Length: 99
Image 1 (cartoon, rainbow, N blue to C red):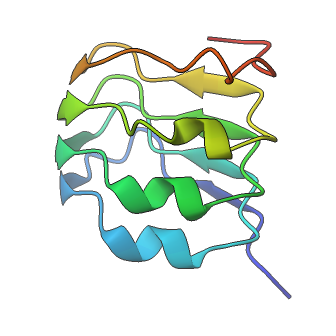
Image 2: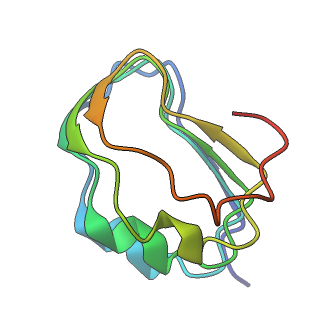
């Protein structure tokens, strides 16, 4: 059995998002909204190739959005709001239905 959904939203988690999250290769939903997650968005996040929904809204993330986030071809929902992230989303991220 593989973990398909991880919802730890609104849990006052803090610290950085560990790069090991990329080991959850079958993950489809990652919801860590409204925590105190800080630091940068790990480049390894693009290894979550089955990811359909990524919600990191209302954290303390800084830095650049990974340039190759377009590798997440199943991604439909992306919420990075209320962080301090820089950069642009590649035009290839065209499957999004909720941004």
